[in-house]
Length: 207
Image (cartoon, rainbow, N blue to C red; front, side):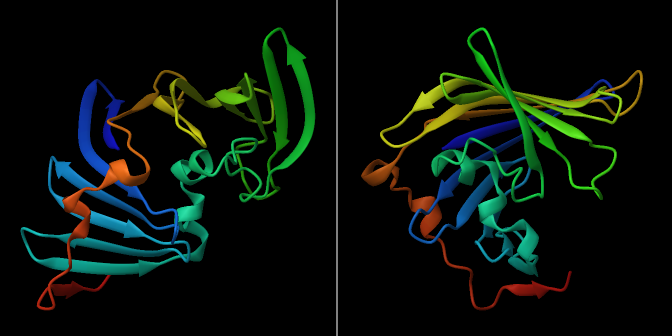
């Protein structure tokens, strides 16, 4: 699928374009970023991340088991783990649920070390997440996330748009919007851009 990532912060708008491939057989996620600069980023379930910059023929490797491909939001939607969207992995504990009209709302308690987040509320409509709110101890929103305009495939549903609002201060916030398009699955997703091989003579960078 294609993705447009937009960040609005302090009156400035930053835009990044990419194409993403999720390999269900291995769990690996590969992103081909095309602007403002071109590079490839591949991450697997063990948290091994490879970044290759074709223009400079440079490659770098990092490894962090806490941030594998199975911690990415795309992983949870494609594999229908939308009931918690990764909160369980982060140590959150579900401690409540309620219904408000057409919405089903679950409440999650943050692990002790995750401050200032105290509680997260997930809101569902027709069994799909449409909203998440991260709150501090006094119930004040720290972050709001909206999931909407769903694409429905044979075995999963994926929001075409995700908007995240982070309240960085009393008078300021950062807005991130991701828009997905040209979503393909199965035999329809063949794309030569993901058949690339990192050259043997690529310069290895130490991070």
